[in-house]
Image 1 (spheres, rainbow, N blue to C red):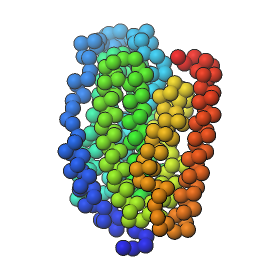
Image 2: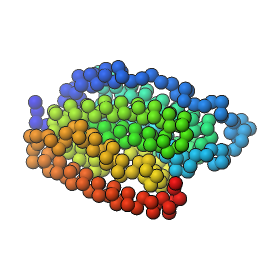
Image 3: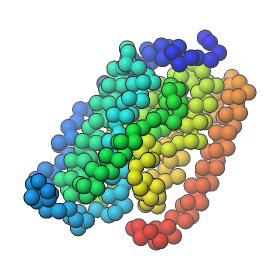
Amino acid sequence: MPDTWTQTALLKELNPVVETELNRHLAVAKEWFPHDYIPWSEGRNFDGLMGGDAWSPDDSPMSDVARSALIVNLLTEDNLPSYHHEIATIFGRDDAWGSWVHRWTAEEGRHGIAMRDYLLVKRSVDPVALERFRMTHMSQGYAADHGDSMMHSLAYVSFQELATRVSHRNTGKYTDDPMAERLLARIAADENLHMVFYRNLMQAAIALDPDQAMQAILDVVTGFHMPGSDIPGFQRKAVEMAVAGIYDLRSHRDEVVMPVLRYWKVFEIEGLSKEGEAARTELANFMDGLDKQAARFEDKRETLKARMNIG
């Protein structure tokens, strides 16, 4: 076993693990259809070519925060072509890797379809503004923060898929719309299976090269941001979501990062080099700091809610 694995060697060595995890995924993934979650009979034409009614915020009882969260979640899903390009470039299209890349893309494609149909049928969003947001966001594309590093990519998607699951699930609850909650829970279930695939694959990578993996985990955790962070108005929307409790520092730390770190037994790995130990120590210190930041935010939540008029 080499001291440090190259990208090509890692891809080849992990291919049997990918095949095993893909077969497991296919055995447990449930088939579902976006159209089943859309109340089509409630829809009506918009203005424009169809000569219907112009959109108004009064068309939907949904709160501004719930609407913002849904727009962020949908636009994040919209950038799927760029995500596919990134993982296909990093993981390749050969063998089990390629089969997974295409399967993942096909499953993710349902999410944007279902969410957009639902929001437009329910008239929960301004269709013109939504399309302009989509065009702007997708025109910017997406590039992985850590280039073509497979180890960093596996670490990132392990956390990101779980973060997406939490965001979708909590957004659904916050909408106070039973059908929206059911749809987003269905999407969240997909995201959870994707997280399990990547998490298990990263666990195998850690066993092969714990030092390289530890540095990658440190880099990803300390520099983490969601792939939709360049959505127009994202920062404002992210603050609204945090104040409402949809996705905040506490959920990020306690429901996303720590469960994955515990699964990998990051703080129990033996045989790390001096550099690996230093990375682990820095990671532990960062997590302690994140805990304190989350506590400070929680102390200010009610004040922020009042200031931002968030119920």
